[in-house]
Image (cartoon, rainbow, N blue to C red):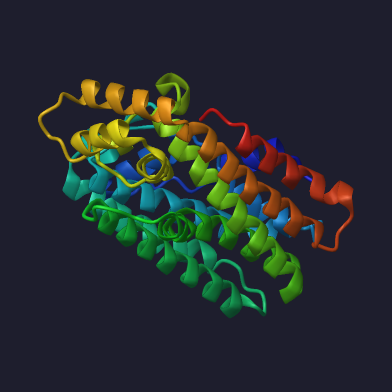
Length: 324
C-alpha cells in the first residue's frame, strides 16, 4: 500500500508534467498558477488510495485523479470570485492576481481539462466512472447555489445547511473515493461503502473548515480569517449561535449580521466574541465528530484487511485534527 506522502508526491509530479505551456499564455498561465499553489491534494490522493485498496497497479487511476483535482481547483477559482476572496493558500486569488474575466475563462478551461484527464481511463466501466463524476460535478454546483441562496435568507435550518455542504464539499470527496474504487476493480457494494465514507468525511471536513474560517490562524490556515462572517454566510456556527443565543446575545447577533456600517475588523471581533460566549465552537466539533464516526463505520464495512485500510483512516484522523 502506498502512503499518503508517496501519493501526494506522485500527484505533484504528474501535475507538473501537465503544465500548460502553450498559447495563449493569458489563458494558461493562471491555470498553472492555481495548480501550483499546493494544497493537501486530498481528493486525488483519496482516489489513488481507493484504487490501491483493490489493485497494486494504480497507474490507470492517476489521470482521473488529476482530473478530479483540476475540477476541484476550477471550483475554487469561481468560488473566490463569488466570495470576493483575496487570498487562497497565502497567495492572491486568480481574479486578484489578474482580473475577474481571466479567472472565469481560465476556470472554464480547467473544467474542460478535467474531463480530458478522466477520459484517459479506458476501462470497460468508463461510462460508470463518468456518471459518478458528472453527478458529483452537478451536485457541487447545486451546493454552491444553495450557499448563495442562504445569504439572502433570514434563517437557515441545521438540516438545510448540512444538505448544502454535503453537496458543495462532500460530494466530490465521495466521488474521488468511488471513482478510485471502480477503477481499482471494486464491486458496486464496496465502492458504495467508500462513497459513504467519503460523504461523511466530507461533511466533517467542511464543519472543521467553518470553524477554522472563524477561529483559525491565518498564517496556518492559508487565507483570511473571518471571510464567512463578513459575507454573512449561514455557516454551522452562525446557525447554532442564533439557535442557542440568549435574548441579549440574539439581539446583538441580529444587529451584527447584515450590518454594512461596521469596519471588517470590528465585525469579525464582535461576532467571534459572541460565538465564544455561546459555545458554538464546541458544538461544531461535536457535530463534526458524529460524521467522522459514521465515516469510520462505513470504512469498517469495506471488505479489505485492516492494514490496507489504515492509511485512509489516518487521512480521516488528520482531517479531524487539522489546523489548515
